[in-house]
Length: 168
Image (cartoon, rainbow, N blue to C red; front, side, top):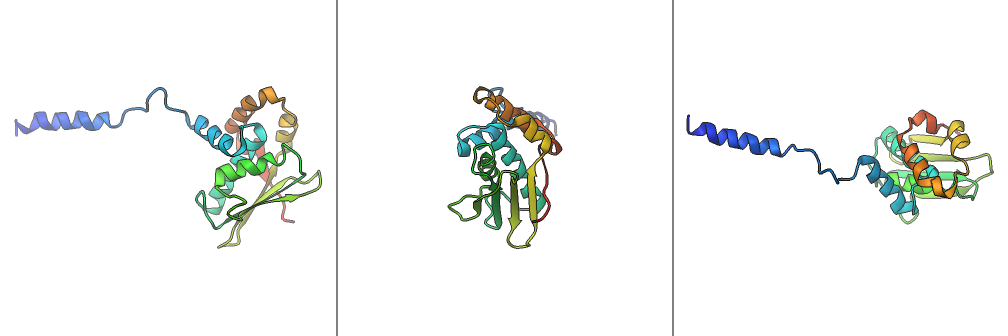
């Protein structure tokens, strides 16, 4: 038993070493998410990050994993940058794409900006639109401030960003 004690102590130290914190230069969760948005959209401004947040929320509500072929995303908005950026953010969050035929952009009147996330298997739908407070705060952010505003959006509560939209 005495011979076993030093070996067990060494094994405990090795096991404890496996639970070390990530290296100081490891990217934060926020950095990873902003890179995911930028990989699809080319940047991580507030409207694209809004779409990302909406997409993550919808996946959770629909109980679907990212890249699910059961998901259909339909984004309705005017054909104008800012509003259409939401679709790229939704694609980054969900893995939906035009090529997989599960991401569709629908041109809508100026007053309509809504994204519908549907589970094909269950028929369940989540319809989301930007919150009025988001629109007031992040419309026409200067290009030089887009990255800062996108990071800010990543940290805000859902209720400040989007809300449920009524069924059509």
